[in-house]
Length: 73
Image: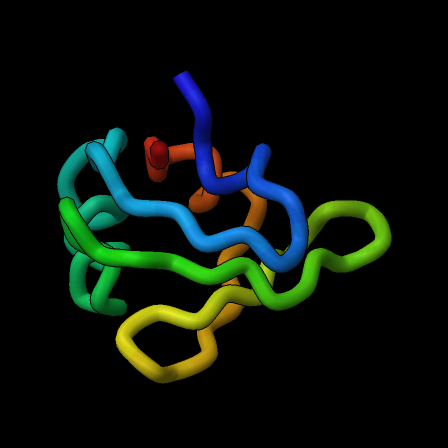
């Protein structure tokens, strides 16, 4: 299983599944990250937290813990 945290800078991936429960999963979905969405990884901070991505033509910063809940291909 590959998560958004494992993706290298400059790669575009497709969301396969969202893991997590309740409010956390809902918050990720409210940010526009849903099944089938393309996500482009723009930057990763030196220690890996946060990850800056482009989703649906806007920039978004995700914590490492949230990026681990997003399964991609």
